[in-house]
Image (cartoon, rainbow, N blue to C red; front, top):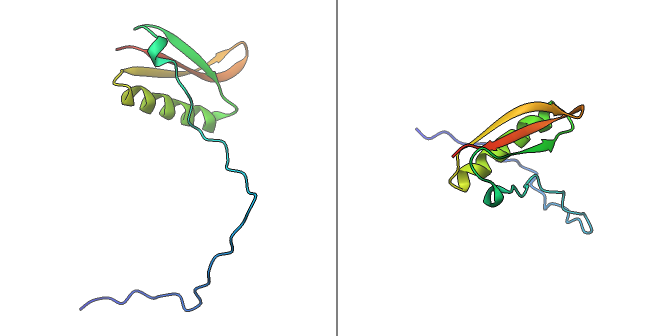
Length: 88
């Protein structure tokens, strides 16, 4: 017996908004093509959540470029951030 999925009775057409700016993307341009094995870079982060997002983004970007990348959270000049190394 098939289960019936309830359908909302009051389906409305969404209101169209204009002049709403597109939010800034989390996409970053990483310098993988300028880096040799063992080279690294530092990205400053605002908080712990930003650290995790930056780590995941750097790792995924390196993987898409066919590289092995390691990231670590660190402080540089008293600022929280991550350092990413190209290791392969």
